[in-house]
Length: 245
Image (cartoon, rainbow, N blue to C red):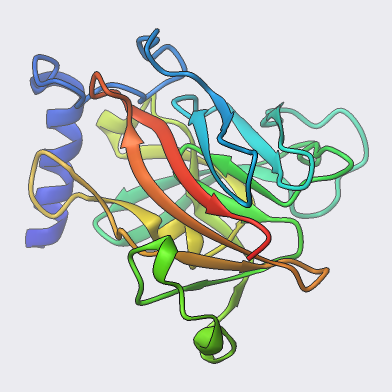
């Protein structure tokens, strides 16, 4: 009951009581304030170690990343069904009470569009892969990855989830939140969390290096350096990458 109370209090504070706090409401919808100092794209790609910067403030799309050709492509999240249903793509509205989710509405949608070639995709802080597996490591520095220990890491494949990829927060005051039924990677999606146990919500990053094992067998190492812009808007991501590892 205590956890539920704090969750409710946190949601109320998010919407009505904390607009004056820097960054609290930034990035809730896709109309977050732009940051002219943030340069999206790949930086320092002359070597195998480089940086990816993304404006992931929107909850309305997935951002697909191809490591081989250093490309970025956005694809909107479907909200309607216009053709034959694949049997699982949907928007799911959940009643959220602490860590309990009660399904209120299930709306079949078109299949999520994807580019022809991609390695992983980001939706705000959520991550999915194109058939890869990911492991969280004990290391916090890309320069000190122990390659001999990689084989013993606990690699996780993507899983389908109906309460991770947030798409609709308009009725959050009624504790009703919309999600996309989507696959996510349970390891890499942990790199940034939002704790509702006490209001206001606390954002945190693990600071860990993650190893992505692509279907080809190639390895990539990723670390979330920052999940906000220099001006404090959450959802502006700076990710350091080593590829191929």
